[in-house]
Length: 109
Ligand SMILES: [Zn+2]
Image (cartoon, rainbow, N blue to C red):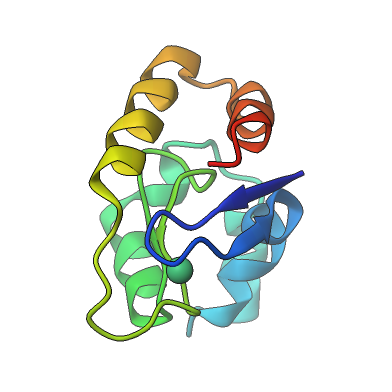
């Protein structure tokens, strides 16, 4: 399943977001490994958001919602309609990340 970056439109594989993107941060490998088993909300605690941001990633409430990614051109702004739609879907699906990801994929979000 692929979801798209809200800023540059780059497709990202859901597996990569859940399992590999964390290794692009400067967390040590043991902590990155532990992150992979955390709950959806713990994964985006401020500490991890900061680490992701330094590596070029910004997420909504879940890692399924890619707001910015390492492919984004400098200074590019997220598409506001896309942000609003994805935020609403995120609320609707709550903790159901798979449902959210497949809906994003269906609508090419
Ligand atoms: Zn991007």
